[in-house]
Length: 343
Image 1 (spheres, one colour):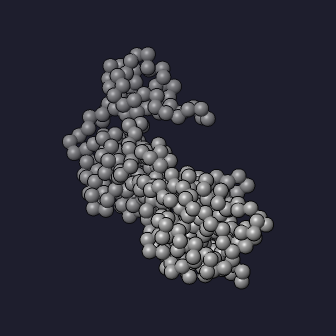
Image 2 (cartoon, one colour):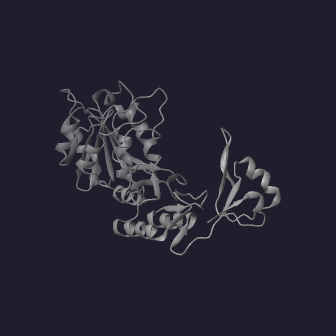
Image 3 (cartoon, helix red, strand yellow):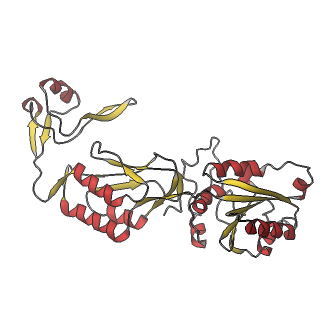
């Protein structure tokens, strides 16, 4: 790589991107790698603080930053990820569809342990939109030893891609609303509309709705009926606390469902229950799901709708980051809530 005074560089090929920054207005590429320097470019280079440019002669066994970044990105990107063209040496990972983001944390850490390599991601196990940027990579120097890139590729080959998507599966969901006050019409069912809206955002729908009194036997019968009718998921709302009149957990158990967790280290949502009746998830939802924008339900629903079967350990990991700040203006999911279970 040769360092050349910009006044002497007319006709030479720029070996690296040059960035322009206007505070509060613009940050981006002023001159791209490969640009042939023109005499009229000299004032611009000088205004950017570039009295010299670099003409790059990449030695054998080394790679230019863009080639290296592209190879690293291709190794780290998995299903559902597309790569942006290099810009200032960096390549971003974009989603091809709305899905559940999965991050291979072991692979991510091993790759970043390779000197000169940087790969950063969003937290995993969260829903992402189509076209969303979820990761980026580049190398630190302008050129890097090819051996280091080979190391990154071998890590990805051994541990699998770092960034992948799991598509959501449209599900037919049944909702059981518990509460004698709802059955008898003293109050309106405000739970079902909230759940319909949340499910619709993932391409799923409510196909059955039943109101039952605070009786375990009625709840159990409704769960069994919906399971026999082919529901992919059953949501049971309300009556999840330890008050004597709150018998929803007992009703879920009485249905024959195997309880995975009752109580999760998440606020709001600590009285949540997850169970399975055969292969059908049966989720007991506390009242906070109805009136908080983000709760335990929002953290785990994308995983169930992507066809995953979370373990007890997965729920325990939610404790780290599982305390909602209840900000005056909710920014979820662009906040720390629920990001502890990132793998």
